Image 1 (cartoon, helix red, strand yellow):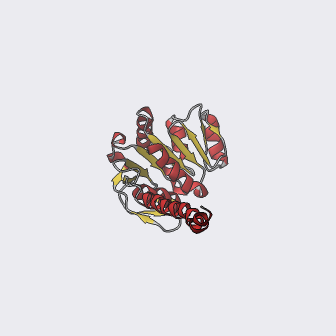
Image 2 (tube, one colour; image 1 turned 120 degrees about the vertical axis):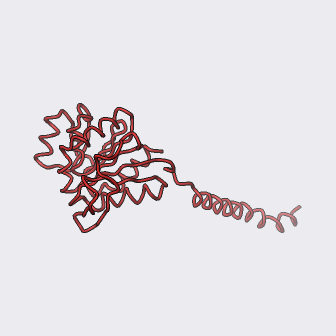
Image 3 (cartoon, one colour; image 1 turned 180 degrees about the vertical axis):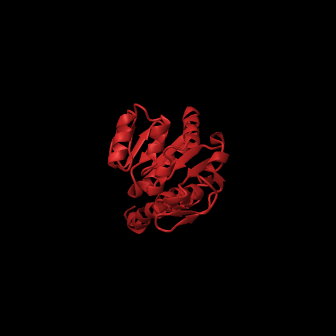
Length: 209
């Protein structure tokens, strides 16, 4: 028995290590083969015709496509839109030509140019329809003001890129401005600017799964 133990103990010790290593490899392969999580989902991204914030568009747009979603980009017209740092995007549709009920999420992109959409009545209508139908709604940087003016954040908490004007608009419309980088209320995600773009995108994906 002693001879047996001396001869085979090293093998018995090594076998679990080999097994765990193989199992780890299988887990890694399974992770690599993971299916995209948004296949069959339709997402509407809304950008300003000029001076949308490049990374606030790029981060979510890339992630949505990676996860298999169908993404439609809309703006005030279908002319090539330009970001604050030179990114160029050709919108698929005019805002007036989309049906919010065709989409699982409406995602608003910020930037200094997004103020042009604050009082867009058609966009207000879409946002309200999306909210009433329990769609996911996202807005980042200065674009949460559009949600505020649409009336879907009354009595709720949200975040936004803060300026004196933004603070007054939130206060006037009975919306709590939290100052957080990300704020989630029901199915509404708001974010306060470019540093939050990645988390903003990931949170939208999480709510759409």
